[in-house]
Image (cartoon, rainbow, N blue to C red):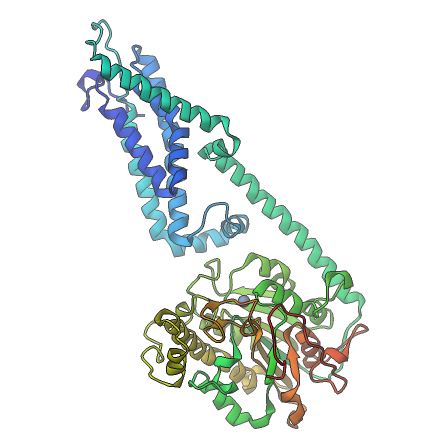
Length: 554
Ligand SMILES: [Zn+2]
C-alpha cells in the first residue's frame, strides 16, 4: 500500500475533506456502473460506514495506516462488484445471478476458459485496466484520510448552522446505512455477501446438473430395456432439422406471396413429389422448451414415463449428434447431452445472440462424413426467433422497401409502420433460413454423405405471430399463428414417391418422434403407429391448444 511518508507533504493535505470526498465519488461511480436506480442508493448505504471512517480525524500514524489498508479493501470490494456487473451487462445484458451466467460459470473448464479469453480478451482487458486504475486512485485517496496533526491546536470552531447541518446529514446517513444492514435482502447486496452467495449458487447449479446426468443415465437405461432394433440392412443416415419460430404461412413453399424459400422450391423442383410437404403441420406448444420436450418425449406426459427419441436411437445402435446454434442450458441438459456428440456452434448464451444459423453447416458436414454406419444428426437452428433482424446478415433484407401485396395488405389492415417493418425482417430471416435448411437437405442427398439409406426431416418447434391475425409480433400462445409450422420429409428409399394423401394429413410436432422412429427404421415394444403420420394406421387427434383454430386442415 503506497502511503505517504509524511502526510503534511502529500498532494492533498490531510486536514482537508478532499481526498475522502474523492474516494466517495469514485466508489459511487463504480457502484453506478454495475447497478441501476434504487440499487445505487442501497449499495451506497452499504458502502457508507467504511468510507465514513476516512472523514474521522485520526491522530496516530499506525491507526492511519491500518485504516488506509482496511478502507482500501472495503472500497475495492464495491469496485470489483461494480465492474464485474458492468462487464456482464455489456457483454450479455445479464445479471451475475441470471441462470445464463450461473450456468456458464458452472460449466466452465480450462478449455472453455481459454476459448472464452480468446474471444473476449478486449472487453476483459478494458475491465482489468479500469480496475487497476480504480485501485491506484483509491489507494491514493485512502492514504490521505483525515488526520488531526500531533500537537496541533484544535480546529477553529465552524459556524453553528454548518455544524448543525453536518450533524443532521451524518445522522441521516448513519440511519440509512443502519437500515441497510438491518434489512436482510438489502445487506445481501453487499459485494462480499453477494459473491459468496453467488459462488454457492454456482455450486447448486453443478449439483443440479449432476442430478440431470443421473436422470439421463436412467433415460438411456430405460431405452435399452425396450430393446429397440433397426429393421434395415446396411448403413443409415437420418438428419433431423429443428428450427425455431418459423410460421409456414410466410414460406413461399407453402404459398406465401413473397419469394422467401427459393432454395427449398429448387429442391422441390428437383425432387418433385419425393419431397413431402406436410401442408397442415401444427405444434402442440408455442414456446421452445415444452415444444422440444414433447417432440423428443413422443408427446406423452411424464406420468407415462415416455422414452426419449435420442436415447432410443442410441440404444438401437445409432451414433447421435446434436449440432446447435442455440446456447440454452435447459435444452443442453434435457436433450443435447443425450447425444454421443454435442456441438455448440454458438457460444453466446441466450436467444438474443446474433450467431447466424449457417455456423452449424461445417459441423453437419463433418458429422455426415463420419465413418459410423448408422447416424442420426440433429440440427437445432435459431430459425426466425426474435429479434428477427438478428437472424440474417446486414443488408440482406430485400423486403423492407417492397411495395407488394403483403405490404399493401398490412396497410389496409391498418398495421403500424414498426409492425410492418417487423414483418419485412421476419420474411428476410426466413429467406436466410431457407438457404441453411436447403443446404442441410442438399448435403443429406449428396453421395458424399455415404452409401445406403438416407432420410431428412425438417420442422419448426412452434410458429410465430407477425401481424398475421393481430397487431402484434412474437411468440403467440393465444393465436393460431403461434402453432402453424412447416414440416418436410425426404428419404431416398423406398424410391417410390410418397402417396399423395400424405401431404394432406394433418400433422402435430409433438408426435414427430413416432415419425422419426419410422425414418430411423427403429422398432421397439412401445411403438404406436397410430401417431406416425407416415403409417397406414395413422389416426389424427386435434391437439389441445389455448388458441382458437377454425380447422386443423388449413
Ligand atoms: Zn422457440
